[in-house]
Length: 111
Image 1 (tube, helix red, strand yellow):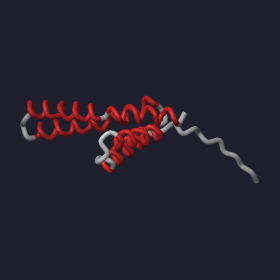
Image 2: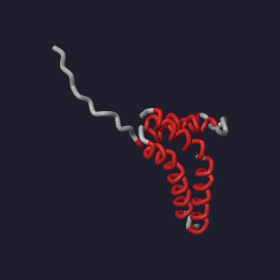
Image 3: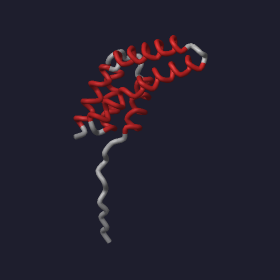
């Protein structure tokens, strides 16, 4: 018997894309521009769309900045926590430019 089951097209996963980008960024930290670009490309291929790919590249910066601010707020340092959280977010965002380019390219390749 030949049974064919229609499979839904893979729409990509924001969670998988984010985890791939974080993992590869950690593994390839020693490659200044190429490492984030590779991580972004692989994450972009997992995300399948440019929107999801760019969100997946931005999400770690937002989460880390919020986590640092939250930890410092717990130690009753609200002003320092806010400034440090925003600062970390901006630094990571500036370093994410190659990751954004790789993510967009990876999402375009999978189309």
